[in-house]
Length: 314
Image 1 (cartoon, one colour):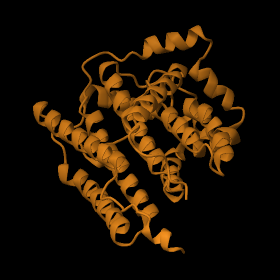
Image 2 (cartoon, one colour):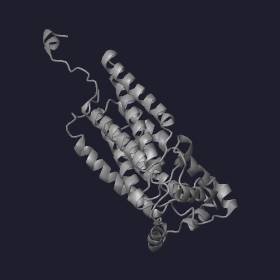
Image 3 (spheres, helix red, strand yellow):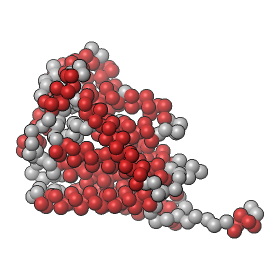
Image 4 (cartoon, one colour):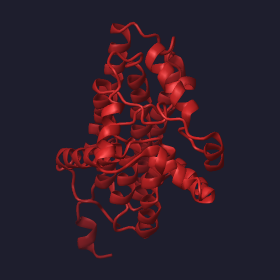
């Protein structure tokens, strides 16, 4: 190393970068909104049960900052802070979604089924067709259930590649899309076709159908009665339109571009489309709307994160 090299200014790690500060602000805002609405609407929430994982997330973020500042572990810092922001936002969003129960307006599923019929899609016919190939339907259940693991894998990969800006855009896109979907669903609730259609029990069993008629009945119970106290134990997937599973598939494929596992991820999430329809109990229009929400959230996130420097790919 030359003397000139020693004189070059060296960048110092920061407590939180610009993007992480934006994400922290989003977490704080959604937490405050959730608390205010819970009080205003008189809905009891088991706050200690929810704040325990939130506290764990904040501890993880603090460890990430320590790793970054004191140990020079930049990638580990990105990973821990990124996971913390996404998990904490999701925790508050799960409460916010359940604050809409019991629903005050009629579900729009009948309209969505008519739209599907216009393009020739019938969910019960789709499920019954897969009943001829139970091994395929069962395989698609594992594809469907892989979404959350895939999301976490993307955080790990982007942090390992030191793509700080891309990671912040990723977490913001996922969070913003989830918020937009929840707001649309709050105004125009839907639960998919499963509450309204009974699939032959033998076909449902052979396929291991996740969103079956019993699941749909549980959704209808929530819509009518709500829950006495919102706790982590009562949380299940409730939103049909737009499909957040579709958003998750788009997130994985888009943000793994340029990585060694892009092609396997793209193939896996191509299979996610029939998996969402089959096991998610979704209308076809739910998937289309999910793609649109992803595109909107991505565009906004890219604009918001524009002040961040380009990724350091070292």
